Image (cartoon, rainbow, N blue to C red; front, side, top):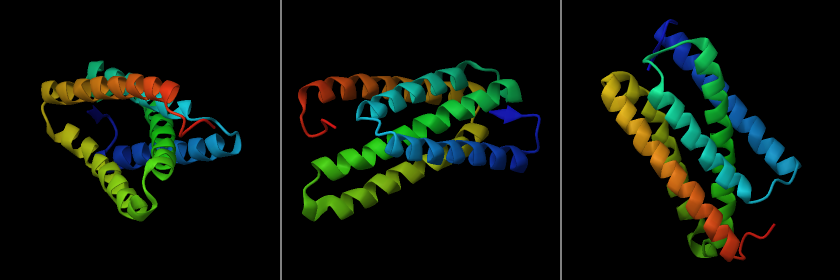
Length: 155
């Protein structure tokens, strides 16, 4: 995806917005005691964000880009927080540190996605984003079903 802004400015602004919103959402989720379904909401928001990104023209305007970044920032914050809480609740104590490290490695590998999408052809980018939307949707549905039957995350 491309914008009319210079690449470094656009990338820096996008990073600031997504990570800033992600951090604020994590704090809100903690202080307001949002429950485990926030991870489900995060995955659903990610799916929406990926669908929007896949279906927009390659040159994003700020009118489309900023709301999209806000959605993806909310998704990031909710998924990161709930993923870590789930890991702490479900992982055996002797593996928790190693699994937390793996969780962060996988999470941070995702930061390479914008670069990958910027260098790929628009059709390839749309296919990647569509696949990610499908995975996020499946994750949201699977998580909602699991939370209904599992007791390890009952507030």
